Figure 1 (cartoon, rainbow, N blue to C red):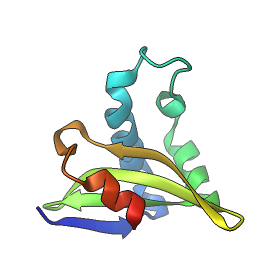
Figure 2 (cartoon, rainbow, N blue to C red; figure 1 turned 45 degrees about the vertical axis):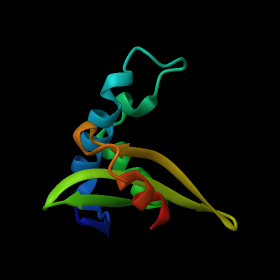
Figure 3 (cartoon, rainbow, N blue to C red; figure 1 turned 180 degrees about the vertical axis):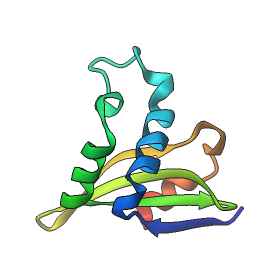
Figure 4 (cartoon, rainbow, N blue to C red; figure 1 turned 90 degrees about the vertical axis):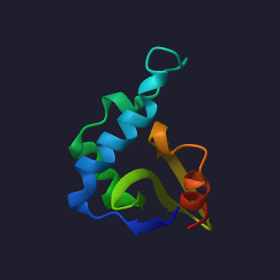
Length: 99
């Protein structure tokens, strides 16, 4: 399986939102405190891209996952690692974190 990673752009905000919400759907009503991903909007994702970045992982031309990140001093904060359920356990999350 070949995974292609690319930097997300502003126009990718709707795709990022769909992937994040789909990846966290199984946890809706099960996490305490609940994930904020289901309150996100396309506009809030665009705001995240203004202050940080995201990487999109694709397999065979289809988006399989993503991760948001931003610099904090000398460190990088990684957040919302999101892999669609049918792409899990194939190393996509590890690739997103190591990119």
